Image (cartoon, rainbow, N blue to C red; front, side, top):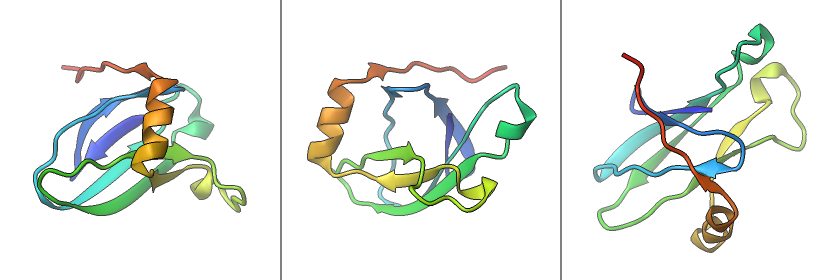
Length: 101
């Protein structure tokens, strides 16, 4: 899944991996979309808005909704409680990505 912030791609991760990035205080739009060679999976995407405060940490994850009704709801982007995030991070690999030139 590649990840974007405020209209620019900032990184990507794979199954059971994570990465982090700084954001300035204020309103932001976070999005994610699946990268795949399979055409049927290229429209899988999700987005969320959040307001960042100076000095705070925010955690988000992708997940499959329990009741998805169409191809547009195969994934959702949700905030994660900081305690739960620490458990998820401990069992995940750190993902490094770089922009293609």
